[in-house]
Length: 76
Image (cartoon, rainbow, N blue to C red; front, side):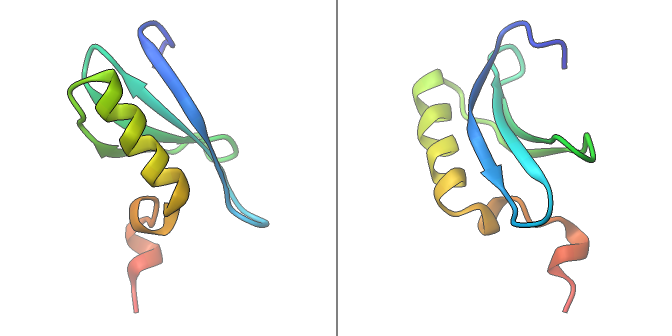
């Protein structure tokens, strides 16, 4: 992501782990989390407006486990 047309909404910090920046791309309408250590990008959703993206990002920040669990994290 080149940063043009993107809106950073905040951070989720995993204790002793990854730090995720929550970003919305207005061109693609994708809300994603980008890991600062791993550089991994997780697509979280596709809110169509900035207002919806901000509300969704706030929900992700408040409940990161619902949105940022990677497939390996979900294994039992």
